[in-house]
Amino acid sequence: MIPNLLSIAGSDPSGGAGIQADLKTFAALGCYGMAALTALTAQNTRGVSAVHVPPAAFLGDQIDAIFADIEVGAVKIGMLATGEVVALVAERMRRHRPPFVVLDPVLVAASGDSLGAPGVVEAMRATLIPAVTLVTPNLPEAARLADEPLAKTLDDMRGTAEKLHRLGPKAVLVKGGHLQGSTSDDVLFDGKTHRVFSGRRIDTPNTHGTGCTLSSAIAANLAKGLDLVAAIEAAKAYLTAALAESAALQVGHGHGPVHHFHALWQ
Image (cartoon, rainbow, N blue to C red):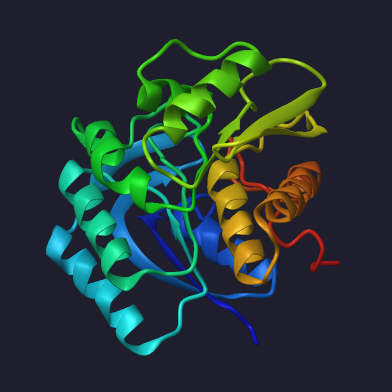
C-alpha cells in the first residue's frame, strides 16, 4: 500500500521549501502527498518579502476534509505563522490522531527572514510539541524553544534535546547543521537514550528547504514502516545525496534548492 502523507505548512512559490519541498520529498520516496496550506509567502532563493495567513478556521476545514475521507499515514508540520494557527493544528492532531506527526518548527528561513509572529514559540511549547511524535529543530530554533543559548557542541545539543523532551514529544532531533566541521551531526533523544547521526557535510550554497526536506523524509519513512532510528538514518542519507546533486539545478541567485529527484532524473 502506498502511504498517504499530509503536509501542514506554508507555500514557497519558488518551489524549494514549504509544501512544495514536502510534496517533492513524499513523491521521491514513494508516497502520495497532500497539503493543507497554513500561509502563502512571497519568496525566492534570496529571501521572503511578504506573508499572507488565511483564517485559522479555514486551515481547520482543510485538515478536517482530508481526515474525513482519506487514511493518513503520517503528518508533517512546517511553517505555522501565528499562535492561533499553532493551537488549532495541535487541537486537530489530538482530534484526528494520525499514527505519526513530525514537527519541523520553522521559525526562520534559510535567508534569515523570520517566519513566525510573536506568540508562536509559546504556543508550540504549550500545545503542539506535546502532541507530536518527533520535533526536528535546528540549533537556532532549538535555542528559542528551549529558551537557552545556542548549542555549540554535541554535549550542548544533548542537553537541549533533553530540555525540549520535557515539553512532551515522544522524541527530539536537534540538528547540528549550523555547527562547523567536516560532518553534520544531529542528536536524537527519546527520553531514555541519546543517538548521534553523523553525515558528510556538503559544501554547497543550495540549502533552501533542507529542514523541510529532512522532516518530510522522516515522516515518509515512518509511514512506510521504518522505526524512528532507521527513518532518520534513511532521511539523512536522502538529504545528503540531494544536497550533493543540487548543482544540477539552476534555480535563482541565492540559496538554491536541493535536488529532490536526484535518484529519479537522468
